[in-house]
Figure 1 (cartoon, rainbow, N blue to C red):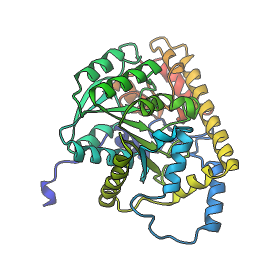
Figure 2: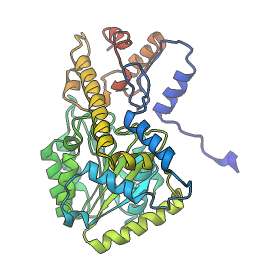
Figure 3: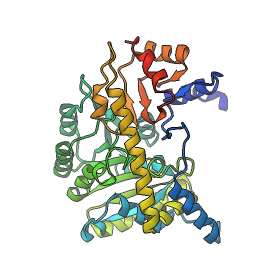
Amino acid sequence: MFDRLPTARTDSLMMLGRLMQADPRPDKIDLGVGTYRDETGAIPIMKAVKAAEAILHAEQTSKGYVGPAGDAAFALGLQAATFPNLSPSLQARMSRIQTPGGTGALRLALQIIAQANPAAQVWIGTPTWPAHLPIIAACGLTARTFAHLTADGGLNRQALDEALAQAAPGDVVLLHGCCHNPTGVDLDPDAWRAVAEIATDKGLLPLIDLAYPGLGDSVEDDVAGVRILLEHCENALVALSCSKSFGLYRDRTGALLTLSKAEATAANLAQVAAGHARLLWSNPPDHGAALVRIILSSDELTGLWRTELDAMRLRVNALRAQLAALPLPRLDLSALSRQRGMFALLPLSEASVDRLRQDHAVYVDASGRINVAGLNAGNFERFATPLASLD
């Protein structure tokens, strides 16, 4: 029966990773995989995480299941750290569930949507994270796309407004919470307010992919637009990831936050979410969530984590500014200093991307998307120099 399966499709980033692994050149530069790297090129374990692991090792007494809803203290702590000082009335309408990473949170959110409204269309700006559209399709929902960028690389507010105008009651608007992947171009406060108002007026459901809080500006500034939605809308879903802001990539740590119109609906939605989680992954992995819970329950470790996150953000923003200042004859990268996050979409043709890989061992996605954090003092010039001859 397996002969009847369709030919497997691999997204461009997975293919890029395979090409890089097969490349024997020792000085190759990986700007594809979306992990934060430090100045030495390593994917570091945060000091706050190592300290929490020591505490967990000493205090943990069981490896039993945590239940389909996961660690409630972790989820509540993550919500409080991301959205501090929400009003009691708003918090009463919210529920939380631990998930295997932000991807698990997105899948769970879309499964719930598909059950509640199978006819819902999911409006999403493109280009976007490569897995968004396949996950939407896998849940049996229809994606409706619009252009996220203008011709000069800014936010295409007109396309966003037109999409919201076309959306029908019950439709979903999927937005990046901050540090847009792959473009680095985020909604401004006016755009967030417009989404909140139109979603409320038309009965649209905001679904927010919030994977990078603290890596654009401060955590509070990065989530300010999502707060506008939570404080204005009757219903919303927020997929939270700890992969980037805590460096817990392989530990698959995330949560889905849900906002409902009423407290009774929130309680039922929590049970519905747990029921879907039971079928999707039964129980979420505990290790990463336990570490985040330990960090956020300690003032000392929370302070250390925030200090480390600040240093990561400052390094990424400094690299963005350095790229933006390059005097290139054919490429204008000045917009990178106004954008935020680990990713940037360079105006490179596929032929130029191929030349970077074949001639210079520089690995960039076919779209021109780079992970800025993959650059450092040791490889910046080796990346920047060939850019001068590309179109």
